[in-house]
Length: 136
Length: 107
Image 1 (cartoon, rainbow over the protein chains, first blue to last red):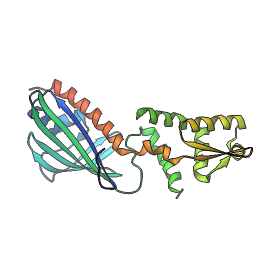
Image 2: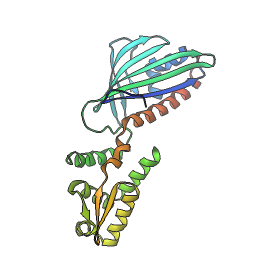
Image 3: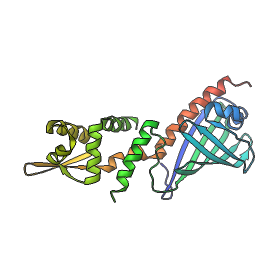
Image 4: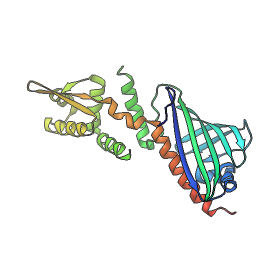
């Protein structure tokens, strides 16, 4: 993991995809297509547009920061426990496109972030967390 | 690592075992005898649960005379609360779905 300031975390996922940037851009920016691979949303490719993503496990509040068609898309990605920014970068290659997603986040408090836990475990972990918080 | 998650989840899935672990978190180090008094199961059963917790790294034992003292290893829970890894897993699976979508999209 890269060195990042205390309290800040970064997640990078990068893949070589055998399609042109234009096609990927559509999947990243058209609400009905976004809904097919990410979450339901009311996205618009307009800087400062606020939109919501929603899934069974909860919602994400977003605001568009950067739109450079077929090149870069960036939006804030805030949940109850996390403030973060998601940035998509599309770079054309011989075989298609290198697609990179970087999420840089800040924990908004001292509470552990439980996103990856399955729903049933979330409740249990919350209880456990309460126990742990009383330890100090 | 999924395997670490699985082990911790499996270990804590048993309510009696979970209660023992939570008691150690709340009350600090305890002997098997003290834990048995509150557990509502036999001492061999408590010892067996403690063995499973120890194997998962969730408790540590300390021998003193004829007594064995157990304490919670809260740090063992860290894998569950590492959002960096959780988010990476989330995005990897989103990328999978994105690729599936791209294949069937019209040009």
